[in-house]
Amino acid sequence: MFSHVQQALDCLTAALDGVEAAPTGELRRTLGLAKSLRSRVELLETRAASAVARRECHGDGGAGLLNQVGGRSRADAARNARTEAELAELPVARSGLAEGEISFANAAKLAQTVRKTSPDAVQADADLVQMAKTLPPDEFAQAAQRWAIQHQSAEDLAAQHRRNRRNRHLRFWNGEDGSVQMRGSFDAEMGARIQERLRRQAELLRQADRRRQTHSQPPGTSL
Image (cartoon, rainbow, N blue to C red; front, side, top):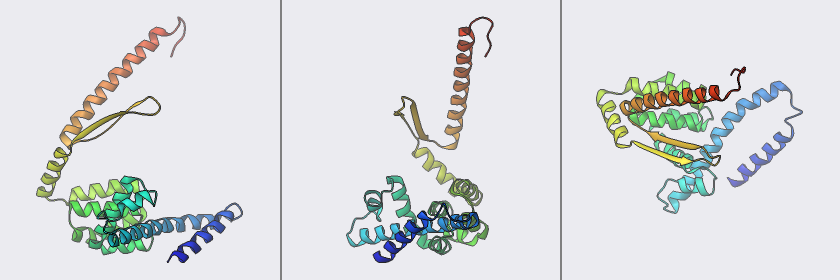
């Protein structure tokens, strides 16, 4: 297997050297092939890491290897390892990923959608699977979220709300550029209240800054 991967790398190197001289039409076709290639490379490294982790009894599905050897961020490594395991319940997504039709990011969203609904519901919706094949990850994430909400039962939604409340958190830290940054997660009710307060406070600060700028302008000038 290693020799096959090495040969593929050699072919990629040759292709990189020929980019500037290639016709525009060929470059456009290459972009489509690159999408398929990217999905298969992620699947290859994830399966390899999973196999090694299983044989060496790591107990993390290969996430540690993807992070330490594969160079993936901890978040991406954990996501890919979990997705690879969960796709056993989604043959249509598993085959789409193996054939390069579905990106790993979209496959992960499909797996997440299964956790919110059911494997049968996701498998049976050809439109959802088609969106996973055609939409970029940011757009599919929104589409999958809307689909999950529409297909969740009242019990599922109540359980999700309880999980969201249980997992509420907010963190602040100082950025390298001197800015103050924050990240958090809330249930819908508290999130809406926090958003409203932040928007209101941000508008007050904006107006105060504008007043200070106006007062500091020399006579006869305008903003």
